[in-house]
Amino acid sequence: MEIDLAFTAAQIAADVRSGRRNPSDAVREALARIEKLDGQVGAFVHVRAAEALAEAEKLAGRADLATLPLAGVPVAIKENLAVTGVPTRSGSRATSAEPPTSDHEVVARVRAAGAIVVGTTAMPELGIFGTTDSSTQITRNPWNPDRSAGGSSGGSAAAVAAGMVPIAVGNDGMGSVRLPAACCGVVGLKPGAGLVPAGVGVNDWLGMAENGPLATTVDDVALLASVLADRRELSGVPDIGKVRIGLAVGSPIAFLRVDRHWLAAARTAASVLVSAGHLVETTQLPYPANPLGMIARWTESVAADAEGLDAKLLQKRSRWHAALGRISRKIGLFKLDQVVALNAKLEEFFADYDVVLTPTLLQSPPAAERWSEKSWLANIWSNAKYGAFAPLWNFVGLPAASVPVGIHPVSKTPLAVQIAGPRGAEARILALAAQLEQRNPWVRTAPL
Image 1: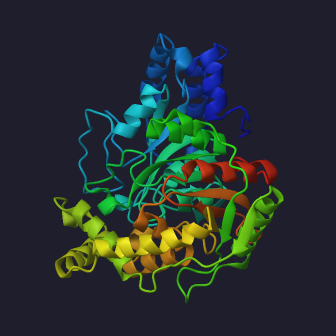
Image 2: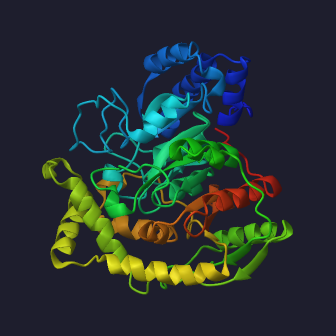
């Protein structure tokens, strides 16, 4: 399906505010794309066709329509964020099928800004793993359906990459926005801790999980981020002058290799930013020598989310993950002083650099298979082999984004770089992403 290049959140909202477009128009376009394409992609769990059209008609009568930053924009929401009237199943049969009677705060903010929720998107059970599938659905990469769209915000990323919606909301606990954004060739931002209301699952993954935007353009990511954070100033990409960039392409785990095309993508991005006037220097990040604390926090988070759920209804891999978390919690494997120590090292690192640039992935996304039926160990190994660049920034609560750079010549899926920075660096990260977009533009949606 040919994608209208005007199908961006910024353009739709500008057209609706000016009266050039009725709010229902973009919603109908999105619903038509979903009907045509989602059978191939598997991005959506629930489509709110009738409700979305009714809400668009109602929006047209709002007195403040001309002031709404997301006026008439179709948006998809990850299935673990409450949308009134739609079950919040978090990818699991063990969760309640009872629809919530109120929206999650970020959903409420998106609606208040004029966006129309067209549906909720697929995710792996409880958001644990880095591929998105269930017993009834596999979310496929729009660029290559034999590959996964990633996870855990795989449905949100795939919906945007396929051009079904211009923007989507996901969340990121161990890379769950950035990994699928990289897999699918869209821009994804994990905000720093406290910028956007969290409230993912039971416990925000002990402070690691943040809600964040996905879109095909940096402007759209910035616009949605400004709404999610309720900070209008984030919608404008600032002039940041000359920036000190650390280029860190070394693998976070010594025995895992980074694919040469992903290495080349990071070096290409670095060269582009040098041509934009920035200073780039090769460096190494202070990754933990022992990732046990990070893994312990991850498993303990899932153990808390699984409390009160019927274990017999959970997938076997999820039961293993939660069980390990309960053991970890009992013996005290995760301690907050681990976070404090790593943050101190990163503060020293960012005394020399304004941001750091890495590949987003170690290699292209895994095969699109029923990972939900494979063992816990198979899932962990697969996730680590391709996604190990991401979790550091969740562990310390610092902002990071994934930005497309090109196409992998073998997998035919996108390449991407990760830009991360110290607390409060979201605008700087997005400004650098915008310079990459301008000087090294990407194809916005997959040629389905």
